[in-house]
Image (spheres, rainbow over the protein chains, first blue to last red):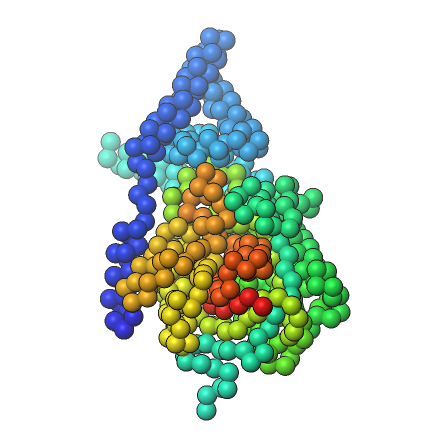
Length: 149
Length: 337
């Protein structure tokens, strides 16, 4: 403990990295593949179903997204979605269902702080950055497309 | 001039060692199902504890645990000179509202997860200093309130890393007295804030381990004791990997306490309970100390115990601004009465 702090910090970082458990990459990747694939599969079934009912491709796509968002919100409300996400990881976060989960969970959580400053203000805590940077990059790409096409 | 009850650099000894007169614990369902489930006084199965919010539930647990501790000793709240308590929520609201309801002179404390040990050390000083006959101390935490303050909404689907810890839902109260039956507090070593550059708020064990090792080492240096004096060294909530880190730092400095070292965070959950590296939160060291440890000392299984409360001093704001997470640890010597 008599060494200079900077050296102690470096040595400690090495020790922490040595002891820290590695994430189970194979298991996580497999989980993301299976659960993400499963969600996509359900989406495809829904899309085919809605098209079979006579909806146009665009309308069937919208109906599919709405149904998936509804299902994910319901599962979040029932406390099931986070249990699935524990195994699904990115496979459950990246699809539209993950987006639904990231909005419903703060809505439930901040209900205690009132409708306006609780639910209203906190609804986009997690989804907000996704929207901001999603819209911003769409704008940027559109701008580049406009000038360089 | 050196203070008469100071020994070495960071340690104080007590002339008339204050007594741990009575303890009480309340925990949540997950803790109740853990390996120490039988050592707790009350297990609540509803995480809202019939209240409208988790914060209210946490506050109610603390109040009940502290009241229960007082009732156990046969005292009434009027006999209590000071109440010392703290929790993890912003502005320590659980402790503040509890103090409002109990109407006892109150000193609010924040030592993150080390709060119970901070309270024990200060409570013992108040008593041995002649400023109090009875001091009521307590600490609490709640998985859901801590998650939403420090991390994500509870229902948010995230994958927790293997070194993450699980905030213990629970509360504990303890009555310290100038005299009476029970284990006594003979020394307290107040820790320094130690920062070895850790920044990952999911890896709190790594943030706290250097502080725990530092305090334990200074305790040995100050008292001139070796590990052989103690039957048990019990740390607050280092978790599996933090405990390993503290052990390694101590070995590197010539103190091998591996055979006597346990951690409340490791004890409180079984591996299959999906808590990953173990428990954390104010309640972790509080309920294990006031439950399991207290009972083991009463049974005579341990006679000389060094309890070390550990805390990670971060806030959601400090981690977002890229600050390090410093740690703190306070040690208290508990001897069978």
